[in-house]
Image (cartoon, rainbow, N blue to C red; front, top):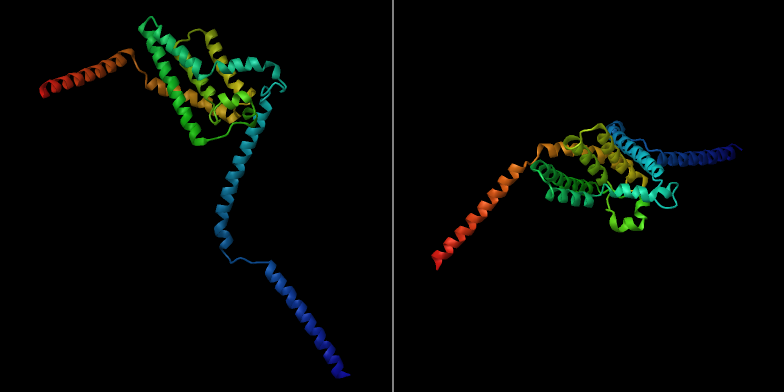
Length: 264
C-alpha cells in the first residue's frame, strides 16, 4: 500500500512538474522583458517622430476636407455647376499668357518714359513669378486634387503640380504692384483687391488647388513685389546697359575686321 501510494504521488508530482514547466516555457516565450535602460533610451525618438507625423497628417486632413467642400464648381454636376463658366472667366483673367501679352503691348505702345518703365518692370516681375513658382513646384511636387485631374481640359492645359498656386502668386503680386505704382483712388483699390481675391477663390471653387496652395501663393506673391521693388530697373539704366553691350559688340566687330586686314 505504501509503495502504491508513493508511485501515485510521484506520478502526480511528475505530471504537475511537467505541466508547470510547460506553463513556464510558454510564459517565458510570450513575455520578453527588455533590459533596464533600453526603453528609456529609445523613448524620446519614438515619441518625437510620431507627434510630428500625426500633426502633419492632421493639418493635411483639414486641408483636404476644406478643399473638397469648397470645390463646388469642379464639374457641371457640382452644386454650383451653373456658374462654372463665369468662374472660369475669372480664372482666365489671372493666367500668365494674357498678362504677358498685355504687358508687352502696353510697353511697346507707351507714350511716356514713365509708362514704359512701369510696364518694363511689370514684365520682369511676371517672368520672375513664373520662375519662382516653377522652382517651388519642382521641389515640392505635390499632386493636384483628384477632381481637377479628372477634367478633360485640365489634363491638357493645367500643370501637373499644385503647390503653390501660380494664379494666387500672380494675383497678389500684380495687385500690390498696381496699388503701389498705378492706383490712386479708393474705388480702384477696392477693385484691384477684389479681383485678386476672386482669382484666388476661383482656384478653390474649380478644385484646381488645395487651400494651403492658395494661401502660400498669396503670401509668396505679396513678398515677390518687395524683391521687384528692390531690383527696380529704370529706363536710363536699361539704356546704359544696352548702349554698353552695343559698344562691346562694335568693338569686337572692329577688332575682327582689323585682324582680318592684317592677315591679308
